[in-house]
Amino acid sequence: MIHCRTSPNRRMAMITQARPYTQQSTATEAPALPGTWKLAAGRAITLQPREEGTFKVAHGQMWVTYDGPHRGAYNESGDHFIGAGQTVRLRAGQRMVVESWNWQNPSYFTWDPLPVAVRQTAPRFNAVLQPLADLRLAIVFGAGAVVRLVHGVGAIAWQLATGHGRAVALNATAGACSTRA
View 1 (cartoon, rainbow, N blue to C red):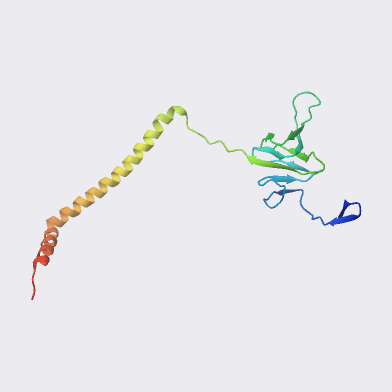
View 2: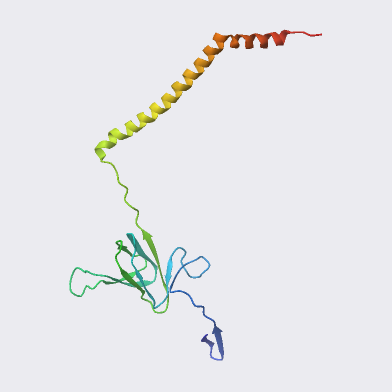
């Protein structure tokens, strides 16, 4: 239980909840930022992603430390301070320790994996491959149309050859004109 003084004569008690150090923000938590991760004040976490991505500070300021090797002067140890809106890119397997720099308020961040590169064919073949794919599709549809046409013509020829087509036409005409008492 935490006690805080609201006026010189009055004390107010607040009950705290045990929560993990980081948690996904929701719209019901004020002043949390939806779609971000919350890093409690004075807490640190280690990130070691399986895929390449970007780490972006959404609110507050963070102290990030990269694993080596580090380039530059001897004092460039991999420690960086980044603020709201700044982005850090991490390679797959690269380790980074992140700490909320403000000891009184939490910081919020996002982690977004980078899109995976899609293998493309050489540009010199694109001028040939697309028309070839279109032609293949046209041949498939054309062959289907030819098969349906041959089937339809064959059915008509069969009906005329066997006399079924003419008998049906005569029966329809005769039925319309017949009178029965």
